[in-house]
Length: 441
Image (cartoon, rainbow, N blue to C red; front, side, top):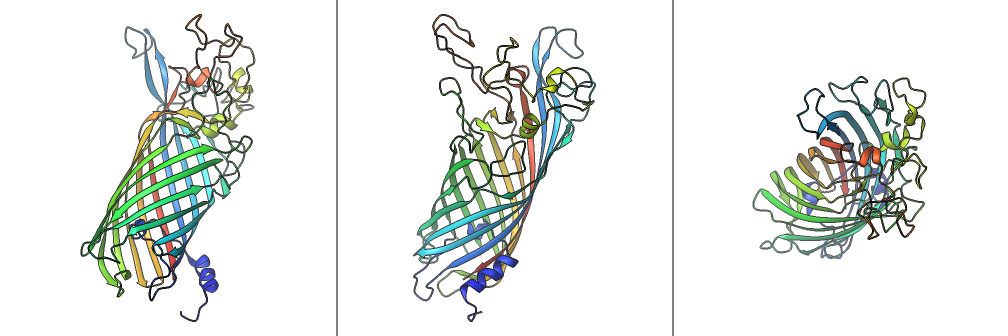
């Protein structure tokens, strides 16, 4: 191994490899310029399979006389659709130690497959659907498998620094501070193309700590993520009118992670760093995502289907490019004539759990397998507000007010954002399997 030069090692690992944010890496930082260890570097390749399963309901005006409705008019929610999305991603991750416990890293996701299917929920068909009925106007085609996506995703670069390390001082924990930036390097994902980029600038901050106590290493971390739209023309997250549009970017994210890595077998170097080991990692994570604009499970259905030429998707509105923004219901054309699929969503949370095993039989190579389950809580998928009343003459949102100004939110659509017509996620289950192989110096 000592005879192999560094470029050759990188080539071998690129052909063979995946590695991870397993617990061993949760607070581990590459370090350089240490006595007896002048340079640390890691190249990892990770394969990630994920399946996302969602049940989508829609608000319904329940009026007296309809089966099951009370004596007074009320708004209820009824199941409408089911969505399934399967993703295959290979991630290439490189880490280099810059100095004592200071690491520079870069991550490039390569999406090998990403496809969404949409169908009716159990008990729903063309006879009782409000989305895609057999007769009458349709919003979009409810039974469809959309195009398969692939390509280079958005690249992330960042720094990780450990101001305290247990391997340097056995009586103190390892503390990690991290900052990362994800650039909009991938082609923007649109409802009408096969690209996978998000068109966003993403900044993430992490603070984490861990401490190995005999054969167990508990860890805890908090994070914050801010997402901002790229320049106009290179993103779908646009500000059409700052005076009336309440949301432009996806919501910020706060996260908490906790878990423990157990070492059934562990051999350390003289300085205390793990050298050969088998570890079992179990943990929990929770995030809270604030309200914002997102590409939801209905993104492609809203933004791509014309419902034209399909006998199961008939009606005059179906011949338009989906939803015309008839915000005043007056039949007149408005500033925006069709939706690109991005919608306002309400805030929501996620809870994730995982179990994984990592094996490092020699100091330079580790392999791991990980299973994850994530639950996303129920929330509105279409929730734009009507607009902003900017004159004092009345309390009505107007297309043209007394000052000759528009008061409507430009991304508000009466067909999907009005109370009584909004779409809602009933909760999402996400199952994942991750395989990794990592080579280290």
